[in-house]
Image (cartoon, rainbow, N blue to C red; front, side):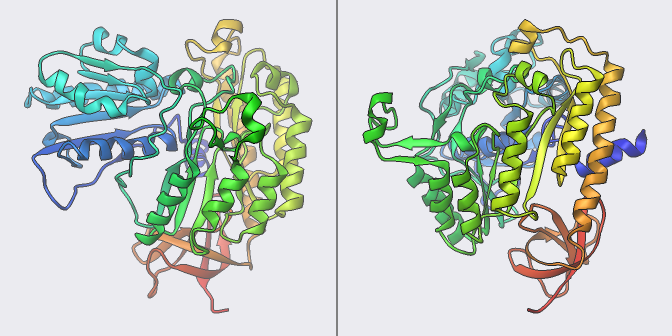
Length: 485
């Protein structure tokens, strides 16, 4: 079991359940006030923390990596699973112990957990001074002032328009090579297991010109890869009509930019700027998007395409709006248009409400058909307020959920290893992102398919593109050496 957990951590670094934490770094120029911010959960939260830091910077706050030095502490939270919220509650207890030596410190909770619990966070344990939802970050300076004036503060109003498109993010924990660009906010899909539509609101897309401008600025500042972020990037759509509030009957007369158009626009910023994106929805990813990826060498050959289950009845209960056959058809299109070497990853949930053993086997057989490069894997965690919580009984015993999850993990480990073995002997273009976590004598980067590649350091530096011949692999990593072409 211990080895199985280790494999999960290696193959499927959980972007939600493990609640990976990134902490901001010291700014070179010290200012009077200090902000300390921790981010939990998905990439959107990390991107939002950069927006928050930019908003507070205009109020004279510099960021610090030491919570004890902070005037304001924010936890940007995830609410997708119960474990994520428990982690935040434990962290709040630790931070309040620090606050005892600095009573003037402001502690706030931002993000999805703030939106879900609202004033409950202020009342139940009184270890939070401030609560702000994902659409209320412009109001943070005012909320902090309220707390400093002696009152607790809350703003969890959701917006149909806010995209923060005019804010230039402060790049926290930046390696100077890769960066996130948020292209849209919210979600309209309402999957029955998911809290995101209730914590992040309705879908709205950002002005494409502001996205291209941000990508251009990043390239000029030395960054060489951007990841376009959205809950469902394939549904990105922006129209000039009525300031992006086009009526349905006017859409045909409007200049509309869809996700394939946006991908092309960002790819044209510079051939040496790699472009990635996350996350795609199987019901929306189009052949136009796939052909755009094929047409531009700097758009990475990698697609995160969450399936959640391999059984059509369970998919219907999840309100995913596609079935097993539709999903497999999209995978077939990816392989035919982009090629067999295109990396595909997925999300999978074991033990959803009423799932039978046979339906679980459908997930395993779908995995055999697709051969994912890696996956993010969980057992079902019922969340308050979701459609599933209201409509279905969470009737699969925990031990069965864990058993099914372990079978999924083991199968993915096998597939990851087999997919990596296909790269042996190939020469691949790697973008170096920094020093290897295990050795200062080695560097690590990623290939187009989003796989980590380790190479000897030599005279190479981060930010360089390097041609590497793959010589060895594990289920999680490729190893190779630089070659001259």
